[in-house]
Image (cartoon, rainbow, N blue to C red; front, side, top):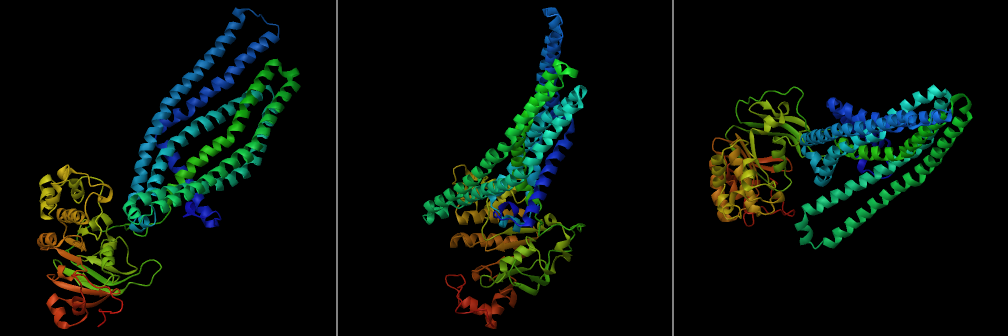
Length: 609
Protein backbone atom coordinates (compact mmCIF):
# COMPACT_ATOMS: atom_id res chain seq x y z
CA UNK A 1 0.00 0.00 0.00
CA UNK A 2 1.17 3.54 -0.72
CA UNK A 3 1.46 4.64 2.90
CA UNK A 4 3.48 1.59 3.82
CA UNK A 5 5.83 1.78 0.89
CA UNK A 6 9.54 2.43 0.91
CA UNK A 7 11.10 5.84 0.53
CA UNK A 8 11.54 5.38 -3.21
CA UNK A 9 7.87 5.38 -4.21
CA UNK A 10 6.50 4.44 -7.58
CA UNK A 11 4.39 6.79 -9.62
CA UNK A 12 1.42 4.52 -8.99
CA UNK A 13 1.98 4.71 -5.22
CA UNK A 14 2.19 8.50 -5.30
CA UNK A 15 -1.02 8.66 -7.32
CA UNK A 16 -2.74 6.36 -4.84
CA UNK A 17 -1.69 8.56 -1.94
CA UNK A 18 -3.02 11.67 -3.65
CA UNK A 19 -6.32 9.92 -4.30
CA UNK A 20 -6.52 8.93 -0.63
CA UNK A 21 -5.80 12.52 0.50
CA UNK A 22 -8.47 13.88 -1.85
CA UNK A 23 -10.92 11.27 -0.60
CA UNK A 24 -10.20 12.26 3.01
CA UNK A 25 -10.72 15.91 2.09
CA UNK A 26 -14.01 15.03 0.40
CA UNK A 27 -15.21 13.18 3.51
CA UNK A 28 -14.32 16.09 5.79
CA UNK A 29 -15.82 18.76 3.55
CA UNK A 30 -18.88 16.58 3.04
CA UNK A 31 -19.34 16.38 6.80
CA UNK A 32 -19.20 20.20 7.05
CA UNK A 33 -21.79 20.48 4.26
CA UNK A 34 -24.01 17.95 6.01
CA UNK A 35 -24.22 20.13 9.12
CA UNK A 36 -24.06 23.47 7.33
CA UNK A 37 -26.38 25.20 9.82
CA UNK A 38 -23.69 24.77 12.45
CA UNK A 39 -20.65 24.88 10.16
CA UNK A 40 -21.41 28.22 8.48
CA UNK A 41 -21.43 30.30 11.70
CA UNK A 42 -18.52 28.23 13.03
CA UNK A 43 -16.39 29.13 10.01
CA UNK A 44 -17.47 32.73 9.47
CA UNK A 45 -17.98 34.28 12.90
CA UNK A 46 -14.31 33.99 13.99
CA UNK A 47 -13.31 35.55 10.64
CA UNK A 48 -15.67 38.46 11.29
CA UNK A 49 -14.23 38.67 14.80
CA UNK A 50 -10.74 39.01 13.34
CA UNK A 51 -11.93 41.79 11.04
CA UNK A 52 -13.14 43.67 14.10
CA UNK A 53 -10.03 42.98 16.17
CA UNK A 54 -7.29 43.48 13.61
CA UNK A 55 -8.75 45.61 10.81
CA UNK A 56 -11.59 47.77 12.12
CA UNK A 57 -9.76 48.60 15.35
CA UNK A 58 -6.75 50.03 13.42
CA UNK A 59 -9.19 52.17 11.42
CA UNK A 60 -10.44 53.69 14.67
CA UNK A 61 -6.85 54.35 15.76
CA UNK A 62 -6.00 55.77 12.33
CA UNK A 63 -9.00 58.08 12.56
CA UNK A 64 -7.82 59.34 15.95
CA UNK A 65 -4.26 59.88 14.65
CA UNK A 66 -5.56 61.68 11.59
CA UNK A 67 -7.75 63.88 13.74
CA UNK A 68 -4.82 64.91 15.91
CA UNK A 69 -2.37 65.25 13.00
CA UNK A 70 -4.83 67.51 11.21
CA UNK A 71 -4.93 69.90 14.17
CA UNK A 72 -8.25 68.71 15.52
CA UNK A 73 -9.53 69.23 19.06
CA UNK A 74 -7.52 67.17 21.53
CA UNK A 75 -10.07 67.25 24.32
CA UNK A 76 -11.50 64.12 25.89
CA UNK A 77 -14.92 64.89 24.48
CA UNK A 78 -13.51 65.14 20.94
CA UNK A 79 -11.43 61.98 21.21
CA UNK A 80 -14.05 59.91 23.07
CA UNK A 81 -15.93 58.77 19.91
CA UNK A 82 -12.72 57.28 18.51
CA UNK A 83 -11.97 55.53 21.81
CA UNK A 84 -15.53 54.23 22.09
CA UNK A 85 -15.42 52.98 18.51
CA UNK A 86 -12.12 51.25 19.23
CA UNK A 87 -13.55 49.59 22.34
CA UNK A 88 -16.79 48.65 20.60
CA UNK A 89 -15.11 46.81 17.73
CA UNK A 90 -12.83 44.97 20.16
CA UNK A 91 -15.82 43.83 22.21
CA UNK A 92 -17.67 42.87 19.05
CA UNK A 93 -14.68 40.89 17.87
CA UNK A 94 -14.43 38.99 21.14
CA UNK A 95 -18.18 38.27 21.12
CA UNK A 96 -18.07 36.97 17.55
CA UNK A 97 -15.18 34.67 18.49
CA UNK A 98 -17.04 33.25 21.48
CA UNK A 99 -20.23 32.58 19.54
CA UNK A 100 -18.20 31.05 16.69
CA UNK A 101 -16.46 28.72 19.14
CA UNK A 102 -19.86 27.63 20.47
CA UNK A 103 -20.89 26.48 16.99
CA UNK A 104 -17.46 25.03 16.18
CA UNK A 105 -17.48 22.82 19.27
CA UNK A 106 -20.77 21.31 18.14
CA UNK A 107 -19.54 20.83 14.59
CA UNK A 108 -16.42 19.07 15.90
CA UNK A 109 -18.36 16.76 18.23
CA UNK A 110 -20.96 15.79 15.63
CA UNK A 111 -18.32 15.27 12.95
CA UNK A 112 -16.16 13.03 15.15
CA UNK A 113 -19.18 10.94 16.08
CA UNK A 114 -20.46 10.57 12.52
CA UNK A 115 -17.07 9.88 10.91
CA UNK A 116 -16.32 7.31 13.60
CA UNK A 117 -19.47 5.48 12.56
CA UNK A 118 -18.63 5.89 8.86
CA UNK A 119 -15.15 4.47 9.42
CA UNK A 120 -16.38 1.44 11.35
CA UNK A 121 -19.12 0.78 8.80
CA UNK A 122 -16.51 0.88 6.03
CA UNK A 123 -14.29 -1.66 7.81
CA UNK A 124 -17.23 -3.99 8.37
CA UNK A 125 -17.78 -4.17 4.60
CA UNK A 126 -14.23 -5.41 3.95
CA UNK A 127 -13.68 -9.06 3.11
CA UNK A 128 -11.63 -11.63 5.00
CA UNK A 129 -8.53 -11.21 2.81
CA UNK A 130 -8.37 -7.52 3.76
CA UNK A 131 -8.04 -8.31 7.47
CA UNK A 132 -5.44 -10.98 6.76
CA UNK A 133 -3.30 -8.28 5.12
CA UNK A 134 -3.56 -5.62 7.85
CA UNK A 135 -2.59 -5.42 11.52
CA UNK A 136 -5.59 -5.01 13.82
CA UNK A 137 -3.64 -2.36 15.76
CA UNK A 138 -2.90 -0.37 12.60
CA UNK A 139 -6.53 -0.52 11.52
CA UNK A 140 -7.62 0.67 14.95
CA UNK A 141 -5.19 3.61 14.82
CA UNK A 142 -6.28 4.51 11.32
CA UNK A 143 -10.03 4.43 11.86
CA UNK A 144 -9.78 6.37 15.16
CA UNK A 145 -7.39 8.88 13.59
CA UNK A 146 -9.78 9.36 10.67
CA UNK A 147 -12.57 10.52 12.97
CA UNK A 148 -10.53 12.36 15.61
CA UNK A 149 -8.52 14.44 13.11
CA UNK A 150 -11.74 15.98 11.82
CA UNK A 151 -11.57 18.28 14.85
CA UNK A 152 -8.09 19.45 13.82
CA UNK A 153 -9.28 19.89 10.23
CA UNK A 154 -12.27 22.03 11.23
CA UNK A 155 -10.21 24.04 13.74
CA UNK A 156 -7.42 24.71 11.23
CA UNK A 157 -9.94 25.65 8.55
CA UNK A 158 -11.63 28.04 10.98
CA UNK A 159 -8.77 29.62 12.89
CA UNK A 160 -5.89 29.46 10.43
CA UNK A 161 -7.54 29.79 7.02
CA UNK A 162 -10.97 31.44 7.18
CA UNK A 163 -9.97 33.70 10.07
CA UNK A 164 -6.93 34.84 8.06
CA UNK A 165 -8.06 34.88 4.42
CA UNK A 166 -11.46 36.59 4.83
CA UNK A 167 -9.97 39.50 6.82
CA UNK A 168 -7.22 39.78 4.20
CA UNK A 169 -9.90 40.31 1.55
CA UNK A 170 -11.42 43.03 3.73
CA UNK A 171 -8.00 44.63 4.15
CA UNK A 172 -7.50 44.65 0.37
CA UNK A 173 -10.78 46.53 -0.12
CA UNK A 174 -9.77 49.15 2.47
CA UNK A 175 -6.24 49.57 1.07
CA UNK A 176 -7.66 49.91 -2.46
CA UNK A 177 -9.62 52.91 -1.25
CA UNK A 178 -6.35 54.53 -0.23
CA UNK A 179 -4.37 53.54 -3.32
CA UNK A 180 -4.51 50.47 -5.66
CA UNK A 181 -0.74 50.19 -5.55
CA UNK A 182 -0.90 49.19 -1.88
CA UNK A 183 -3.03 46.17 -2.81
CA UNK A 184 -1.07 45.20 -5.92
CA UNK A 185 2.25 45.20 -4.07
CA UNK A 186 0.80 43.18 -1.19
CA UNK A 187 -0.73 40.56 -3.51
CA UNK A 188 2.51 40.40 -5.50
CA UNK A 189 4.57 39.70 -2.38
CA UNK A 190 2.15 36.95 -1.34
CA UNK A 191 2.37 35.34 -4.80
CA UNK A 192 6.19 35.45 -4.77
CA UNK A 193 6.22 33.85 -1.33
CA UNK A 194 3.90 31.08 -2.46
CA UNK A 195 5.95 30.48 -5.62
CA UNK A 196 9.18 30.10 -3.63
CA UNK A 197 7.71 28.00 -0.84
CA UNK A 198 5.56 25.60 -2.92
CA UNK A 199 8.38 23.26 -4.11
CA UNK A 200 9.78 23.11 -0.59
CA UNK A 201 6.37 22.12 0.73
CA UNK A 202 5.99 19.39 -1.91
CA UNK A 203 9.31 17.91 -0.81
CA UNK A 204 8.27 18.14 2.81
CA UNK A 205 5.03 16.25 1.99
CA UNK A 206 7.12 13.24 0.96
CA UNK A 207 8.95 13.40 4.28
CA UNK A 208 5.66 13.62 6.18
CA UNK A 209 4.30 10.57 4.34
CA UNK A 210 7.36 8.57 5.36
CA UNK A 211 6.99 9.75 8.97
CA UNK A 212 3.31 8.74 9.12
CA UNK A 213 4.04 5.36 7.52
CA UNK A 214 6.63 4.74 10.24
CA UNK A 215 4.02 5.55 12.89
CA UNK A 216 1.67 2.96 11.42
CA UNK A 217 4.39 0.31 11.47
CA UNK A 218 5.17 1.06 15.12
CA UNK A 219 1.53 0.81 16.19
CA UNK A 220 1.09 -2.37 14.17
CA UNK A 221 4.12 -3.99 15.80
CA UNK A 222 2.88 -3.06 19.28
CA UNK A 223 -0.55 -4.55 18.58
CA UNK A 224 1.01 -7.70 17.09
CA UNK A 225 3.21 -8.27 20.15
CA UNK A 226 0.41 -7.60 22.65
CA UNK A 227 -1.95 -9.94 20.83
CA UNK A 228 0.67 -12.72 20.92
CA UNK A 229 2.20 -12.06 24.34
CA UNK A 230 1.94 -15.68 25.47
CA UNK A 231 3.90 -16.81 22.41
CA UNK A 232 6.51 -14.11 23.04
CA UNK A 233 6.98 -15.32 26.59
CA UNK A 234 6.90 -18.99 25.68
CA UNK A 235 9.86 -18.45 23.36
CA UNK A 236 11.63 -16.04 25.76
CA UNK A 237 11.48 -13.41 23.02
CA UNK A 238 10.84 -10.35 25.20
CA UNK A 239 14.30 -8.89 24.61
CA UNK A 240 14.14 -9.62 20.91
CA UNK A 241 10.77 -7.90 20.51
CA UNK A 242 11.91 -4.97 22.68
CA UNK A 243 14.94 -4.55 20.43
CA UNK A 244 12.71 -4.66 17.36
CA UNK A 245 10.41 -2.07 18.92
CA UNK A 246 13.33 0.24 19.75
CA UNK A 247 14.56 0.00 16.18
CA UNK A 248 11.12 0.89 14.80
CA UNK A 249 10.70 3.79 17.24
CA UNK A 250 14.20 5.06 16.40
CA UNK A 251 13.31 5.01 12.69
CA UNK A 252 10.10 6.88 13.41
CA UNK A 253 12.04 9.47 15.41
CA UNK A 254 14.61 9.86 12.64
CA UNK A 255 11.92 10.45 10.03
CA UNK A 256 10.00 12.82 12.33
CA UNK A 257 13.07 14.94 13.01
CA UNK A 258 13.92 15.03 9.33
CA UNK A 259 10.45 16.33 8.40
CA UNK A 260 10.40 18.84 11.26
CA UNK A 261 13.90 20.12 10.54
CA UNK A 262 13.08 20.50 6.88
CA UNK A 263 10.12 22.69 7.79
CA UNK A 264 12.03 24.77 10.28
CA UNK A 265 15.34 25.14 8.45
CA UNK A 266 14.23 25.25 4.83
CA UNK A 267 10.65 26.50 4.62
CA UNK A 268 10.77 28.99 7.51
CA UNK A 269 14.18 30.26 6.32
CA UNK A 270 12.51 31.37 3.09
CA UNK A 271 9.32 32.71 4.68
CA UNK A 272 10.95 34.76 7.47
CA UNK A 273 12.93 37.23 5.31
CA UNK A 274 9.99 37.61 2.92
CA UNK A 275 7.77 38.50 5.88
CA UNK A 276 10.22 41.17 7.02
CA UNK A 277 10.46 42.45 3.43
CA UNK A 278 6.66 42.73 3.22
CA UNK A 279 6.48 44.84 6.37
CA UNK A 280 9.29 47.14 5.21
CA UNK A 281 7.85 47.55 1.71
CA UNK A 282 4.41 48.39 3.11
CA UNK A 283 5.81 51.04 5.42
CA UNK A 284 7.94 52.59 2.65
CA UNK A 285 4.97 52.69 0.29
CA UNK A 286 2.75 54.36 2.84
CA UNK A 287 5.42 57.00 3.58
CA UNK A 288 6.05 57.57 -0.13
CA UNK A 289 2.32 58.02 -0.80
CA UNK A 290 1.58 60.00 2.36
CA UNK A 291 1.28 63.30 0.54
CA UNK A 292 -1.88 62.26 -1.23
CA UNK A 293 -3.25 59.89 1.41
CA UNK A 294 -2.75 61.50 4.80
CA UNK A 295 -1.00 60.32 7.91
CA UNK A 296 -3.82 57.88 8.85
CA UNK A 297 -2.98 55.87 5.71
CA UNK A 298 0.47 55.16 7.18
CA UNK A 299 -1.12 53.75 10.34
CA UNK A 300 -3.61 51.59 8.42
CA UNK A 301 -1.06 50.35 5.89
CA UNK A 302 1.48 49.46 8.55
CA UNK A 303 -1.17 47.61 10.60
CA UNK A 304 -2.56 45.73 7.61
CA UNK A 305 0.82 44.78 6.20
CA UNK A 306 1.95 43.65 9.67
CA UNK A 307 -1.09 41.40 9.93
CA UNK A 308 -0.24 39.99 6.51
CA UNK A 309 3.24 39.20 7.82
CA UNK A 310 1.70 37.00 10.49
CA UNK A 311 -0.31 35.19 7.82
CA UNK A 312 2.77 34.64 5.67
CA UNK A 313 4.85 33.52 8.65
CA UNK A 314 2.12 31.15 9.80
CA UNK A 315 1.63 29.78 6.29
CA UNK A 316 4.11 26.98 6.88
CA UNK A 317 2.55 26.18 10.26
CA UNK A 318 -0.93 26.17 8.73
CA UNK A 319 0.21 23.90 5.94
CA UNK A 320 1.97 21.59 8.41
CA UNK A 321 -1.17 21.22 10.48
CA UNK A 322 -3.37 20.60 7.46
CA UNK A 323 -0.98 18.16 5.83
CA UNK A 324 -0.64 16.26 9.11
CA UNK A 325 -4.43 16.04 9.40
CA UNK A 326 -5.02 14.91 5.84
CA UNK A 327 -2.04 12.55 5.79
CA UNK A 328 -3.28 10.70 8.86
CA UNK A 329 -6.85 10.68 7.56
CA UNK A 330 -5.56 9.37 4.21
CA UNK A 331 -4.05 6.38 5.98
CA UNK A 332 -7.63 5.27 6.49
CA UNK A 333 -9.19 6.46 3.24
CA UNK A 334 -6.52 4.67 1.22
CA UNK A 335 -7.98 1.46 2.65
CA UNK A 336 -11.30 2.42 1.10
CA UNK A 337 -9.58 2.55 -2.30
CA UNK A 338 -8.52 -1.11 -2.01
CA UNK A 339 -11.11 -3.06 -4.01
CA UNK A 340 -12.82 -5.90 -2.16
CA UNK A 341 -12.42 -9.38 -3.61
CA UNK A 342 -15.78 -10.57 -2.28
CA UNK A 343 -18.71 -8.19 -2.84
CA UNK A 344 -22.47 -8.41 -2.89
CA UNK A 345 -24.03 -8.57 -6.37
CA UNK A 346 -25.40 -5.33 -7.78
CA UNK A 347 -28.84 -6.94 -8.15
CA UNK A 348 -29.01 -9.66 -5.47
CA UNK A 349 -31.61 -12.39 -5.60
CA UNK A 350 -34.02 -12.70 -2.69
CA UNK A 351 -33.21 -15.60 -0.40
CA UNK A 352 -35.63 -18.41 -1.21
CA UNK A 353 -33.75 -21.71 -1.41
CA UNK A 354 -35.88 -24.74 -2.19
CA UNK A 355 -34.03 -26.71 0.50
CA UNK A 356 -30.71 -26.85 2.35
CA UNK A 357 -28.95 -28.98 -0.25
CA UNK A 358 -25.43 -27.89 -1.24
CA UNK A 359 -23.82 -28.46 -4.60
CA UNK A 360 -20.33 -27.59 -5.86
CA UNK A 361 -20.45 -27.46 -9.66
CA UNK A 362 -17.17 -27.57 -11.61
CA UNK A 363 -15.51 -25.42 -8.96
CA UNK A 364 -12.01 -24.17 -9.69
CA UNK A 365 -10.11 -22.26 -7.03
CA UNK A 366 -6.54 -21.42 -6.15
CA UNK A 367 -5.06 -19.30 -3.41
CA UNK A 368 -3.49 -16.04 -4.58
CA UNK A 369 -0.21 -16.67 -6.36
CA UNK A 370 -0.52 -20.45 -6.17
CA UNK A 371 -1.66 -23.25 -8.45
CA UNK A 372 -5.34 -24.31 -8.46
CA UNK A 373 -6.36 -26.24 -5.36
CA UNK A 374 -9.68 -27.32 -6.84
CA UNK A 375 -10.02 -28.00 -10.56
CA UNK A 376 -13.53 -28.77 -11.84
CA UNK A 377 -14.60 -30.08 -8.44
CA UNK A 378 -18.10 -31.56 -8.32
CA UNK A 379 -19.72 -32.45 -5.01
CA UNK A 380 -23.41 -32.93 -4.31
CA UNK A 381 -24.72 -32.85 -0.72
CA UNK A 382 -28.51 -33.40 -0.60
CA UNK A 383 -30.54 -31.55 2.00
CA UNK A 384 -30.35 -33.15 5.41
CA UNK A 385 -27.25 -35.20 4.57
CA UNK A 386 -24.38 -35.39 7.05
CA UNK A 387 -21.03 -35.34 5.27
CA UNK A 388 -17.60 -35.95 6.79
CA UNK A 389 -14.66 -34.31 4.98
CA UNK A 390 -11.43 -36.18 5.65
CA UNK A 391 -7.92 -36.24 4.25
CA UNK A 392 -4.43 -35.04 4.99
CA UNK A 393 -3.64 -31.41 5.80
CA UNK A 394 -3.65 -29.20 2.73
CA UNK A 395 -6.22 -31.32 0.92
CA UNK A 396 -8.76 -28.49 0.76
CA UNK A 397 -11.20 -29.41 3.53
CA UNK A 398 -11.21 -26.08 5.35
CA UNK A 399 -11.02 -24.18 2.07
CA UNK A 400 -14.22 -25.91 0.98
CA UNK A 401 -16.05 -24.59 4.05
CA UNK A 402 -14.69 -21.07 3.52
CA UNK A 403 -15.86 -21.11 -0.10
CA UNK A 404 -19.32 -22.19 1.03
CA UNK A 405 -19.39 -19.29 3.51
CA UNK A 406 -18.17 -17.07 0.67
CA UNK A 407 -15.26 -15.79 2.70
CA UNK A 408 -13.47 -16.34 -0.62
CA UNK A 409 -14.87 -16.55 -4.15
CA UNK A 410 -14.36 -19.40 -6.59
CA UNK A 411 -12.30 -18.70 -9.68
CA UNK A 412 -14.69 -20.65 -11.88
CA UNK A 413 -17.79 -22.76 -11.49
CA UNK A 414 -20.44 -22.10 -8.87
CA UNK A 415 -21.78 -23.19 -5.49
CA UNK A 416 -25.50 -23.69 -5.02
CA UNK A 417 -27.66 -23.86 -1.92
CA UNK A 418 -31.17 -25.08 -2.59
CA UNK A 419 -30.63 -24.37 -6.26
CA UNK A 420 -29.54 -20.74 -5.74
CA UNK A 421 -26.08 -19.59 -6.77
CA UNK A 422 -24.53 -18.16 -3.58
CA UNK A 423 -22.72 -15.51 -5.65
CA UNK A 424 -26.13 -14.07 -6.54
CA UNK A 425 -27.14 -13.65 -2.88
CA UNK A 426 -26.29 -10.98 -0.34
CA UNK A 427 -23.50 -12.26 1.89
CA UNK A 428 -25.61 -11.64 5.00
CA UNK A 429 -28.49 -13.67 3.55
CA UNK A 430 -26.17 -16.53 2.62
CA UNK A 431 -24.56 -16.72 6.05
CA UNK A 432 -27.94 -16.62 7.78
CA UNK A 433 -28.35 -20.18 6.47
CA UNK A 434 -25.15 -21.45 8.08
CA UNK A 435 -23.91 -22.16 11.61
CA UNK A 436 -20.12 -22.31 11.57
CA UNK A 437 -17.59 -23.55 14.11
CA UNK A 438 -13.99 -22.92 12.94
CA UNK A 439 -10.82 -24.74 13.97
CA UNK A 440 -9.81 -21.88 16.27
CA UNK A 441 -12.95 -20.33 17.77
CA UNK A 442 -12.72 -16.57 18.19
CA UNK A 443 -14.04 -14.94 21.35
CA UNK A 444 -14.98 -11.32 22.00
CA UNK A 445 -13.81 -9.63 25.19
CA UNK A 446 -17.32 -9.99 26.56
CA UNK A 447 -19.11 -12.32 28.94
CA UNK A 448 -19.64 -16.02 28.28
CA UNK A 449 -23.34 -15.23 27.88
CA UNK A 450 -22.70 -12.47 25.34
CA UNK A 451 -20.31 -14.63 23.33
CA UNK A 452 -22.98 -17.29 22.91
CA UNK A 453 -25.79 -14.77 22.29
CA UNK A 454 -23.72 -13.25 19.46
CA UNK A 455 -24.99 -16.05 17.20
CA UNK A 456 -28.60 -14.91 17.34
CA UNK A 457 -29.52 -11.33 18.27
CA UNK A 458 -32.73 -11.21 20.24
CA UNK A 459 -32.40 -14.73 21.64
CA UNK A 460 -34.03 -15.16 25.04
CA UNK A 461 -32.07 -16.06 28.15
CA UNK A 462 -33.82 -19.44 28.12
CA UNK A 463 -32.58 -20.11 24.56
CA UNK A 464 -29.02 -19.05 25.46
CA UNK A 465 -28.96 -21.26 28.56
CA UNK A 466 -30.39 -24.18 26.63
CA UNK A 467 -27.61 -23.89 24.03
CA UNK A 468 -24.99 -23.53 26.78
CA UNK A 469 -26.18 -26.66 28.53
CA UNK A 470 -26.31 -28.63 25.29
CA UNK A 471 -22.66 -27.72 24.60
CA UNK A 472 -21.72 -28.43 28.25
CA UNK A 473 -20.68 -24.81 28.81
CA UNK A 474 -22.39 -24.51 32.17
CA UNK A 475 -20.14 -27.19 33.63
CA UNK A 476 -17.23 -24.74 33.67
CA UNK A 477 -19.08 -21.40 33.46
CA UNK A 478 -20.71 -21.79 36.86
CA UNK A 479 -17.26 -22.12 38.46
CA UNK A 480 -15.99 -18.84 36.95
CA UNK A 481 -15.70 -15.75 39.22
CA UNK A 482 -18.84 -14.11 37.85
CA UNK A 483 -20.40 -17.27 36.51
CA UNK A 484 -22.10 -17.02 33.15
CA UNK A 485 -21.40 -13.26 33.10
CA UNK A 486 -17.61 -13.57 33.48
CA UNK A 487 -15.60 -11.63 30.89
CA UNK A 488 -13.52 -14.09 28.87
CA UNK A 489 -10.66 -11.68 28.05
CA UNK A 490 -9.32 -10.56 24.68
CA UNK A 491 -9.73 -13.41 22.18
CA UNK A 492 -10.97 -15.56 25.08
CA UNK A 493 -7.58 -15.85 26.81
CA UNK A 494 -9.20 -16.57 30.18
CA UNK A 495 -10.70 -19.78 28.81
CA UNK A 496 -8.93 -22.98 27.85
CA UNK A 497 -8.98 -24.20 24.26
CA UNK A 498 -11.64 -26.76 25.09
CA UNK A 499 -13.78 -24.19 26.89
CA UNK A 500 -13.60 -21.82 23.92
CA UNK A 501 -14.62 -24.68 21.67
CA UNK A 502 -17.65 -25.42 23.82
CA UNK A 503 -18.72 -21.75 23.67
CA UNK A 504 -18.36 -21.85 19.87
CA UNK A 505 -20.47 -25.00 19.73
CA UNK A 506 -23.11 -23.32 21.88
CA UNK A 507 -23.18 -20.51 19.33
CA UNK A 508 -23.83 -23.02 16.55
CA UNK A 509 -26.61 -24.63 18.56
CA UNK A 510 -28.21 -21.24 19.27
CA UNK A 511 -27.85 -20.23 15.61
CA UNK A 512 -30.26 -23.04 14.67
CA UNK A 513 -29.42 -22.73 10.96
CA UNK A 514 -30.32 -25.32 8.30
CA UNK A 515 -26.66 -25.87 7.34
CA UNK A 516 -23.99 -26.77 9.88
CA UNK A 517 -20.24 -26.38 9.21
CA UNK A 518 -17.91 -27.92 11.78
CA UNK A 519 -14.19 -27.56 11.17
CA UNK A 520 -12.40 -29.74 13.75
CA UNK A 521 -15.07 -28.59 16.19
CA UNK A 522 -14.12 -30.99 19.00
CA UNK A 523 -10.35 -31.25 18.54
CA UNK A 524 -9.58 -29.29 21.74
CA UNK A 525 -11.92 -31.30 23.97
CA UNK A 526 -10.83 -34.03 26.33
CA UNK A 527 -12.14 -37.53 25.62
CA UNK A 528 -14.90 -37.42 28.24
CA UNK A 529 -16.17 -34.00 27.13
CA UNK A 530 -15.95 -35.00 23.50
CA UNK A 531 -18.31 -37.94 24.01
CA UNK A 532 -20.89 -35.64 25.64
CA UNK A 533 -20.53 -32.87 23.04
CA UNK A 534 -20.58 -35.32 20.13
CA UNK A 535 -23.96 -36.57 21.29
CA UNK A 536 -25.25 -32.98 21.49
CA UNK A 537 -23.91 -32.29 18.00
CA UNK A 538 -25.44 -35.46 16.63
CA UNK A 539 -28.85 -34.33 17.84
CA UNK A 540 -28.19 -30.89 16.38
CA UNK A 541 -27.38 -32.40 12.98
CA UNK A 542 -30.70 -34.17 12.68
CA UNK A 543 -32.73 -32.78 9.76
CA UNK A 544 -29.85 -30.45 8.87
CA UNK A 545 -27.25 -30.45 6.14
CA UNK A 546 -23.92 -30.93 7.89
CA UNK A 547 -20.33 -30.70 6.64
CA UNK A 548 -17.89 -31.90 9.27
CA UNK A 549 -14.13 -31.54 8.78
CA UNK A 550 -12.13 -33.98 10.87
CA UNK A 551 -8.60 -35.31 11.21
CA UNK A 552 -9.71 -37.67 13.97
CA UNK A 553 -11.68 -40.15 11.89
CA UNK A 554 -13.50 -41.60 14.88
CA UNK A 555 -15.53 -38.37 15.07
CA UNK A 556 -17.12 -38.88 11.63
CA UNK A 557 -17.77 -42.61 11.45
CA UNK A 558 -21.51 -42.02 11.93
CA UNK A 559 -21.81 -39.59 9.01
CA UNK A 560 -24.14 -40.47 6.14
CA UNK A 561 -21.23 -40.16 3.75
CA UNK A 562 -17.49 -39.58 3.99
CA UNK A 563 -15.69 -37.58 1.31
CA UNK A 564 -11.95 -38.16 1.07
CA UNK A 565 -10.04 -35.16 -0.34
CA UNK A 566 -6.48 -35.18 -1.57
CA UNK A 567 -4.90 -32.07 -3.10
CA UNK A 568 -8.27 -30.63 -4.02
CA UNK A 569 -9.69 -33.79 -5.57
CA UNK A 570 -12.35 -36.16 -4.30
CA UNK A 571 -10.57 -39.51 -4.34
CA UNK A 572 -13.23 -41.56 -2.59
CA UNK A 573 -16.77 -41.36 -1.18
CA UNK A 574 -19.00 -43.66 0.85
CA UNK A 575 -19.95 -44.67 4.37
CA UNK A 576 -17.34 -45.63 6.92
CA UNK A 577 -18.09 -49.36 6.46
CA UNK A 578 -18.15 -49.17 2.68
CA UNK A 579 -14.83 -47.36 2.51
CA UNK A 580 -13.17 -49.80 4.91
CA UNK A 581 -14.38 -52.72 2.80
CA UNK A 582 -13.09 -51.04 -0.36
CA UNK A 583 -9.57 -51.09 1.07
CA UNK A 584 -8.83 -47.82 -0.69
CA UNK A 585 -7.37 -44.50 0.45
CA UNK A 586 -9.78 -44.14 3.40
CA UNK A 587 -8.94 -47.57 4.73
CA UNK A 588 -5.25 -46.72 4.60
CA UNK A 589 -5.97 -43.45 6.43
CA UNK A 590 -7.86 -45.40 9.09
CA UNK A 591 -5.02 -47.84 9.63
CA UNK A 592 -2.39 -45.08 9.68
CA UNK A 593 -3.99 -43.14 12.50
CA UNK A 594 -2.02 -42.63 15.67
CA UNK A 595 -3.95 -41.82 18.82
CA UNK A 596 -7.06 -41.10 16.79
CA UNK A 597 -5.45 -38.52 14.47
CA UNK A 598 -4.05 -38.76 10.98
CA UNK A 599 -0.33 -39.23 10.65
CA UNK A 600 0.98 -36.60 8.24
CA UNK A 601 3.85 -38.68 6.89
CA UNK A 602 5.19 -37.58 3.53
CA UNK A 603 7.08 -40.85 3.22
CA UNK A 604 3.81 -42.74 2.94
CA UNK A 605 1.23 -41.16 0.69
CA UNK A 606 -1.69 -43.11 2.09
CA UNK A 607 -4.19 -41.34 -0.15
CA UNK A 608 -2.85 -42.72 -3.39
CA UNK A 609 -5.22 -45.37 -4.83
